[in-house]
Length: 300
Length: 203
Image (cartoon, rainbow over all chains, first blue to last red; front, side, top):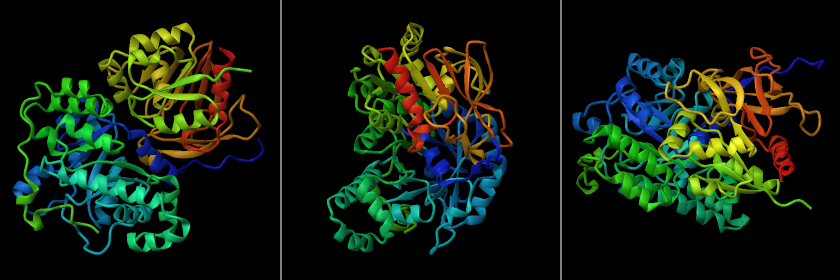
């Protein structure tokens, strides 16, 4: 060939969103050290999420929750061969820059950490590393995608072991998408206004009947049946936070949730893998959580 | 008149849906398969992209390897992209120590060879045997490359762009086809068409 081939392009939409496509049908597990990361990988996790404390401990200990120690993230990256994600505070672009420099595979701009900016989320287009963000409804999901998120997860209510908020958010996002798909073109302008999201993106979702990025569930998944329910509702994969390492037998529960996510529509498999798991995390009733301790309201 | 091939997509984990859409566009019946009994009437199989360690573990857990290996030995056409390429390799480097593969292609594949996600990239790849002379636009995500191949293996594509010039990224051995990249993520259907033609030739 006479022309020099173009140099490979990194950090494109396609490689960011495509990375999340590869995680579908899988379970991403919160881990706080290399040992937990290995347990997660052994159990068949598709990725691990490195954080300083699991959400249940952030709730218990209080204080400001931040990005993890780089040494801890390096330790996890060195310990496993599956992708490693890590959390940055909402709006804290400098934490995200550090995570990118450490070579994490995905950044979670997460409401579980204490927000660093009460007006602006991170401009995620500026990064090579892709981002996942939480959402409670379609408008919020589309605002995050507008800012460059390449993957969306329900917020749920992390660290509670209570799936009710994840259910609410999954149902809301998917119901909002269904509602768009029956509108005619003339009605999409107002729909965009009501969703507080860009018209072009609203139109794209209305036509495709799905988000332009992968949608996982997160926030309160603690059992194989929880994972099965979320997948049946339409999640494309599952994040499990405190649910695994706050339970009696983490290795066994981790594998059970992986198996349940695969065979989510087969109750015989869910029943089989739900046996003898030991104690689940205790859990918190959302009604008893004061408003200021609810993470789902962080971000907008 | 040829019959419509039934092509399974191994649905343990990964971008199953995208492969199924590509195959359906080429007038094949695409069927996600997860259980041993679902393989019986398949004419061919696609192993999608995904996390190869997870796929391998789930295939062990649910007892799929004997069936997969038997079907490959019988000559059933199989196409693997990315993690699927790893699954079709006789030998892998940088995998987990306990990572099993289906095997069938006499090659050594290096997992995550191009690096981590920040090194994931798009590049045009000249690809032998596709319709037309245009290169295929390859999407490489934490992708493997083929370190070396045996005498029976036909190399279909090598990267031409630096810093990866000459790296082998697509191969065929008999009825087995593998690519490092993800043609299921782009609208160009020529790689899937190549595979569906391979399948039709066996019917």
